[in-house]
Length: 114
Image (cartoon, rainbow, N blue to C red):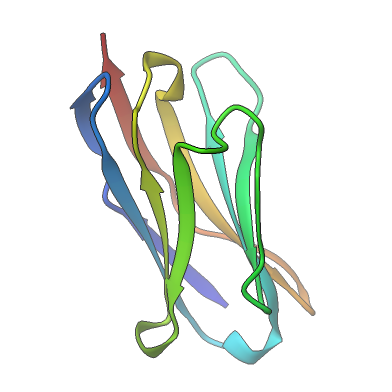
């Protein structure tokens, strides 16, 4: 399983960004796709998950502002981020929960200016 995250950038507080995670390989073995983020000097934290059945989970800090969706035809998972805050700044990663283990994509930097 391979994952490629993209879409990061610099945005002002209150703005929006959409991140993409393109997935390839043994897609049938994936139980869910997570989005994580890591701020400078902090531990990596779970932002949210989309499960194979379509259900989603969000961390309390982003609930109501972020939304995870997928386009099965494109094998791509999206993280729509609205009402961004400076504390949302960090490197965002996608991760696949697969039968054979977890697979990480490379990170994409999101910077929210105040």
